[in-house]
Length: 202
Length: 202
Image (cartoon, rainbow over all chains, first blue to last red):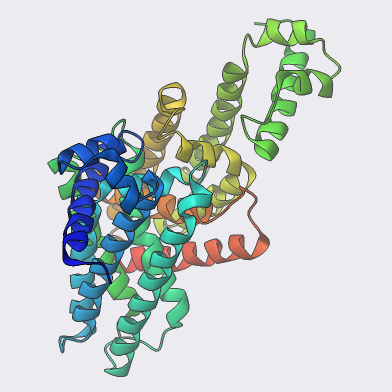
């Protein structure tokens, strides 16, 4: 356990790094800028994070953890499975919007960045699939959903909505998403969920 | 109109280029290899195609043209709209498999390659959306489908299935798709179409 002052600095670094990575992406953010944001010397910053990649991974991990905790909260609520899926998609969309540069990186990772970050994104993806599986199981148990192949339909669910998100990024020259594009994505999410529900409900 | 011999050479170049691009991708294919495949000097090859990018664009354009012609054929047939959509997806999936490196490039294009090839892929995407729109219009006219917002549902349709394809590429270290992955994608296509149909049918 780090001392209090250390912990404060640690959190400040993560906070500044998150803002910069989300706004400018990994490549365009420098360690000097992050140190500058919180009045830290570059040497001190490197004491906490020996390199930018490690810091970036920590930011992404924290984001994933926060989101997964929110999802767990949804799952433990007593509302019907369909509403949980809806809640999950809302939170997922907000997260996408907040962390859009990180999602873009996920796409870029098919080339050069893959080896470094692939596991991080892959683990999160697996956690999401598992979570959706639990929601589907809940709906099957309450007889709202058909008796589905849970593994298959969880992956299909994640793939469809991930696909819709990527579609927004691929069409763009820059990573900044406009209100119009975001609204369209939101509407597509609703339509796709509606179709998915018709496909799996009893 | 080029002379017969010229036209023959032109087609041989396209054929060799397509094979190499599809197998090894744009970056790992050289003009020297393509010239070698058909016993042409490098100077002669450059007479037909001044650079590799131009040759690549021609290969992709030809692929798009062939596929769009096949789609048009489907559209002019007398089968119900649902079957046309199904036929479209089958052809689209075959094309994806044949040209998988080119699809991967489409993904990579969010970075460096974007300015050069963006228009090519964007035009094809628009052509596909237009085509799906015509199929939906056909289904509405025969009262098989609800009275839909055609522009919106065509784009949603394309986005969902493109998303499923990209999902296969993103999960991979290399671009070679295994039989198992391809079968899963095929199954996902069927499920997603099934859900889509439930969402739009009368």
